Image 1 (cartoon, rainbow, N blue to C red):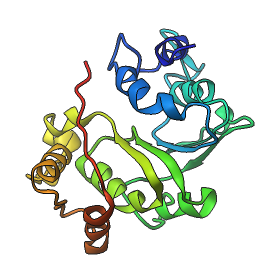
Image 2 (cartoon, rainbow, N blue to C red; image 1 turned 45 degrees about the vertical axis):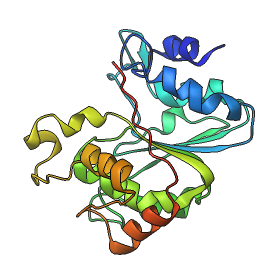
Image 3 (cartoon, rainbow, N blue to C red; image 1 turned 135 degrees about the vertical axis):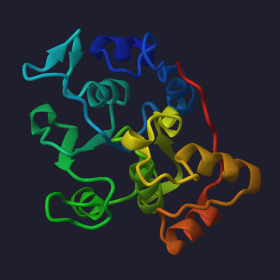
Length: 214
C-alpha cells in the first residue's frame, strides 16, 4: 500500500484530507522504506476513552509507520501512557519534551535516550507544538540522529498562532523563524538551545527544507 492509503486506513491527521504531510513523507521516505531503520516520533494521539473518534485510532501515526516500514523499530513518546499500542516493533515511553533532564512530574528527553538509545534514522516532532518544545527538542535530539538521518518538525504553523498557547515567552525567534534564518545564513540562533547544541546543529545540519501542507 502507498503511504497515503495507510494513513487513510488509520485516519492519522497526516493524511491527504487533513494536513496532507504524506505527500512529502512519501518523497523523503520511499527510498528507505524496506530498510531496517529506527524511528522516533514525539507525540502520540488518543482521540477519546474508547480509542476511536471519527475513525481515528489510538496511535494512528505509529501504526501508519508500522505498516509503511515493515523492517523498522518504532518508538513513541508522549506525556501520557500509551503502552496499549505497543507490539513487536512499537515501543513507547512517557516524557516531557520541553525538558532535557527529568523533572518532578515527568521524565525529560534524556530518559528517552536512556531507554531507547540514540542512532535514530528518523525523528519526528509531532508533540505539543510550542516554540520551547520544538526548539528544545531540535537542539537536544538532533545529535542522536544517524548520519544522513532526517529530523522532522510538524505543525510549524503554530509559529503564527496564539502566543498564549504556543509562544508564551513571546520570543521573536519562533521555530519557523529559526529555520528560515538557517536557510538564509546557515546559522541556527535560539534562546532555547544550549551553545553546544547550536554549535552541533551549525556543524552537522546539512539541509533545511520547509514544506507547506494543507
